[in-house]
Image (tube, rainbow, N blue to C red; front, side, top):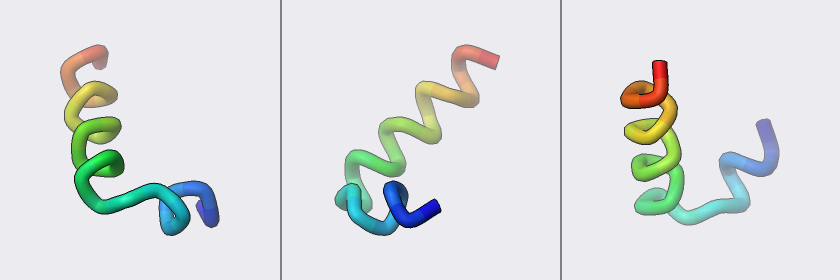
Length: 23
């Protein structure tokens, strides 16, 4: 989970949104 902390909040939100959209 360290990778999430390393990435910026915006990028994390975008990734989460993409993940939700994909699923």
